[in-house]
Amino acid sequence: MPFPTVPIDLRSDTVTRPTAAMRRAMAEAEVGDDQYGEDPTVNRLEERAAELMGKEAAVFVASGTMGNLVALLAHCGRGDEAILGDESHIFWYESGGAAALGGIPFNLRPTSGLGRLDPDDVADQIRAVRPGYPRTGVVCIENTHNRCGGTVLPLDVLRELTGVARERGVPVHMDGARIFNAAAALGVPASTIAAEVDTVQFCLSKGLAAPVGSLVAGDAPFVEAARQGRKIVGGAMRQAGVIAAAGLVALEEMVDRLSEDHARARRLAEGLAEIPGVNVDLETVQTNIVIFRPPAGLDSATVIEGMATQGIRISNYGLRGLRMVTHYEIDDDAVDRALEAAASVMAPIHA
Ligand SMILES: Cc1ncc(COP(=O)(O)O)c(C=O)c1O
Image 1 (tube, rainbow, N blue to C red):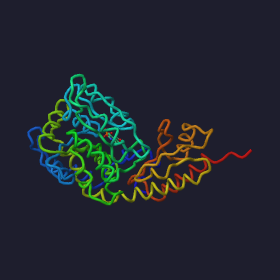
Image 2: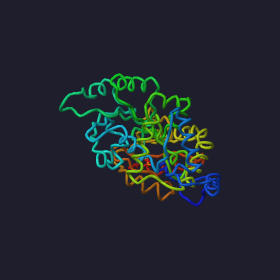
Image 3: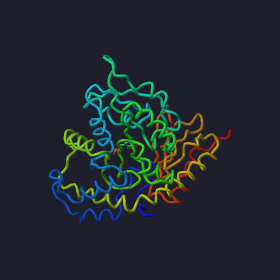
Image 4: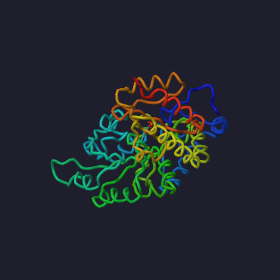
């Protein structure tokens, strides 16, 4: 185990700590004032991100939340509507930032269990240009889809959805916090996925294990607008090369191993499904996230507490149940131990 003193932390892939190579790169990073465009490490990271996404340009931001926010601010003027899923991270967990700061109303659409929006529904919701209707500024999609269990949008499904938006002249933004997990699951480069959307946000700080940072990529005018938005929200930095350096290592060294996390998530899900009464929808376990429901009569808080006493941390996912996420600090032994703990905590009680 690389980190023996810490419990097995399956709450999220955001708990990953920087690798030794990242810490070295951070210590040695060449830096400058990024607001003058003079931080060579940030510049390299932005260029690399644009290249990996197959886009003209990219901008480095502090978090996935900031990335989505500046993207929405770039796509929408005040009063322009964003169409997005009712299970999306942007809606659930980003403090309504686009509405609070950009005056951008959310038009929330139903999300399928596999994290998909219905293209006919989206087509229907894109407003005609008419007094009284808000302009539709953007359609947002999420890939992989967090609350739906890390599900991946197959390329044909993605194309159908972006097709309806493009036909109507509306740009599509992808919250691709975990786009590299989607790419690993589909066996394609991330740029193949990103090619289907106008703009994309992806995170370095999730399965790629960097301590901080996300990138927003798109065409040059969009990235210029996102850069302006980043300044507005106070996110323009100075010698940010010290954190960008870890991001470069993340892109270099941590992408190819994501399929290991997927295989372990699968093993976790299949093991959980064998515990009587535990409900796991195996169809949704496509990447590194496993969502499951405990047996009837056993509440989530009891399971979380029981697991914690055995050194296993998992997270509460409200009505969706409980969540476990695999990442590079979770090895095969950790999966075995998590399954043993789960089996004992959720064991059927015999009268
Ligand atoms: C799908 C998705 N989008 C965006 C974010 C936001 O990222 P951050 O926590 O860096 O703001 C997350 C974080 O977990 C996420 O899962």
